[in-house]
Image (tube, rainbow, N blue to C red):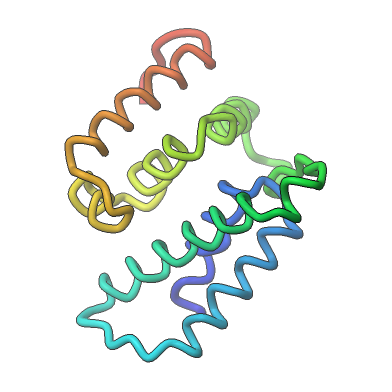
Amino acid sequence: MERYADTVWRLCLIHLKNRADAEDVFQTVFLKYVLSTAAFESDEHEKAWFIRVTVNACRDLLRSFFRSRTVPLDELADLPANVPEDHREVLDAVLALPAKYRDVVYLHYYEGYTAPEIGYMLGKNVNSVYTLLARAKKQLAEMLGGDRDG
């Protein structure tokens, strides 16, 4: 849990945008891990499993009947007070992206995965990942008021 808790938690918050649902999915993911009989080939294979299970669990919750009958609290992740305003603006813009773009942006820019690795984890073609990243960057540039360096 110490090794993957941070990644799972951030993925939950990015997808679900509220702390309560994120806590539920976080617990579900680690419960599935404990009950799993999967044999992992490497640490990277294990991490990919965690990412895939987390993304799927978030999507399942978002599609659930219960979720469709409730109103989200629109709670953002708790950011420390010393985080610069432009970082908050970027986080808000990333959270406003459609889920298919949030996934690839998070995995590429926050977790440092390459497009082929992301494609493998999300079950997508590598070229699709590149396309999603390009479209996400374009949408972020529009939301943030033009091209930004970085």
